[in-house]
Length: 398
Ligand SMILES: *Cc1c(COP(=O)(O)O)cnc(C)c1O
Image (spheres, rainbow, N blue to C red):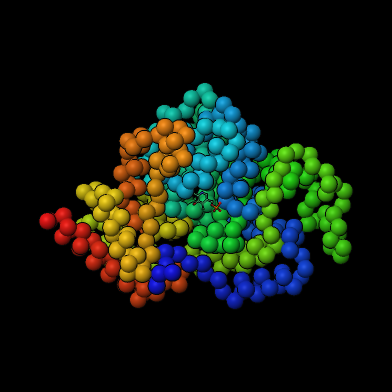
């Protein structure tokens, strides 16, 4: 591992204690911690239901199923994201319809979203890329006007808000994710949020092998662990997408520290910004919205800088490799989804299909970003980046 990794989970004694407590309790799945964790996520995102699942991807899959999206349906989404936001559309046999991004926020350009709507469009699946809530209100208006669904892949945006409205509260449903590089982690995990009672019930059933809604902790005898009624009654084709009590306990302990963790991430952003601000070769991550509290409203998932447009992926890749040689983490977030081998081969996408996303994706560098970074490690990242950029300018002059 690099001396300075790209990301690192923040696990305190409270998390370790919470996990060992579950192990001692003997109740390792479907218990009170799952319920509590769901409540905390729902409350934070201003929703009435949280449904904990085994990953963000699993949550997206269940939303697609629960909303009845399937073959013949089109879902408008972004090519500039983690691949799961588009794969979940394919899982149910529907068609992802990509639209290009707005170069400021890196989220979908709302005008292009509206222009892509056809009679087959069932939903807009919007991603708060890197935790940026920009345009969510516009997507919600467009969805309402055209009577289609808005689904939020808010896997990168826990705890963010725009104009006081939390990330996760814009669409019919949303999903958060808790892989170790996210703002909080459960190891692996996710949580669906929605105000739709029927959808919530359906997602609970689907994540639990298609069992009826009764098989929750409350229906389990607390002494014997036996479940009432229909543990062996499967009402529909379901999955095992449950989140264990061990993971939920970790999640609760992380949620109790969420504001501290987010504040620390903001401080690191401010520190990076201060040091990198005047570099002509570099564009810093944009503040999410026009309002002055923009920096406060974003939930910072990663810190991604962009090389100036006179650079291309060759220089960018050399900068990243150079940083790796110096044991400093860096990554090219994100390669465009439509240019991934599977998408090219299956759907015939090619370079030039979504030029803005492609141009940006060639020039991005995610820098190390985690709560335990101190001034010295930030300084080391900044100095290493500087050396690599200077080297590229020299190469250009030859
Ligand atoms: C992290 C993430 C997911 C879900 O990832 P899992 O590893 O399945 O939890 C989905 N979409 C986006 C945009 C993500 O960043």
